[in-house]
Image (cartoon, rainbow, N blue to C red; front, side, top):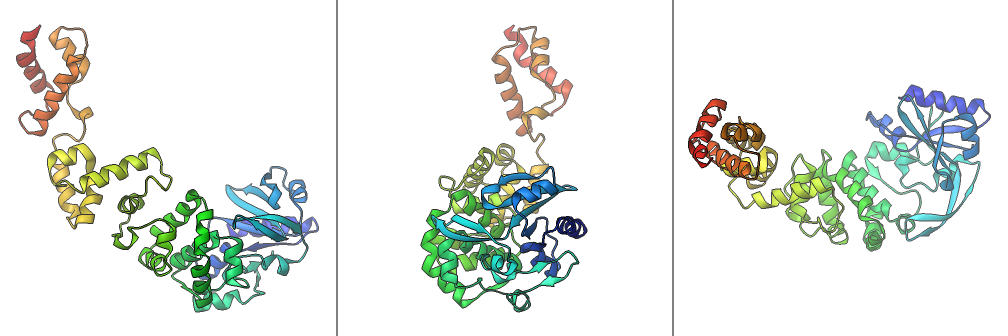
Length: 366
């Protein structure tokens, strides 16, 4: 990926412009972490980038950004700029293009994200970002209160980056978060959930939750049950404990899973009926929350004679044929009977056994 990025920088510079890799990719590169997104900053204007890369996309042209895809790698290329007046503590209302890299870096969030790499792979560090990397601490670029007031989303970014990298937040950053955290109400729940997902799925999720609680962000984020969360290697399992389906956005599938997890928490997760109805995944998560061994749940689940109705060894058409009747609602009743008797081990799930049972018990109703 780095080779492709450096080639992209060279191509821009061959056209008379300056270009650098900036931000998270350089930070992670120095930390020995693989990164998927590469941000490029340049003095080239969006129209210049379009001229250089014919297939460039301009979904964010109004912010001076262009997206270029090379070898299935997504590069976001942003023109050097200064920003003025933020709307609802999130988006800049005004900006102007500039030609000064150092000035462009001043608008960025944290010192560790101001590190740049030129076309030759040389690291440029104008604001001692490398020092913060070495000391594993996060400072903002300039006044922290101003940074968070301009863009409240930076509050969650600070906690997320600190969590993922296992870095400390500087005292100035913490104080500024205390003073500005009420501005998080301006951020969409979708964006907030994206950052929380990254925090909860981090190897250092316990530290991230500690930071959220220490800074009082659980209240601002409407996560009243956060202090009681039991960490799981599963995001749905964590969100199920927070009980915020009516607040944060979830897919229909996620909503269904969360509802089922909350339901089986009140049930016996080793019971064959509960295991059959709600499945291994949901019962395993609930069992973990209750301190029940996942191995025990898996063992009991694997003892089920069938895992779903589709595994019953006869189908509706065969039932109609053996009874010599036109398919109708009665088939569902017979399948219900078979399902229950198989689960209760009163019938073996064998094709001929089931056909004989159907003929014996329902054949007389012809």
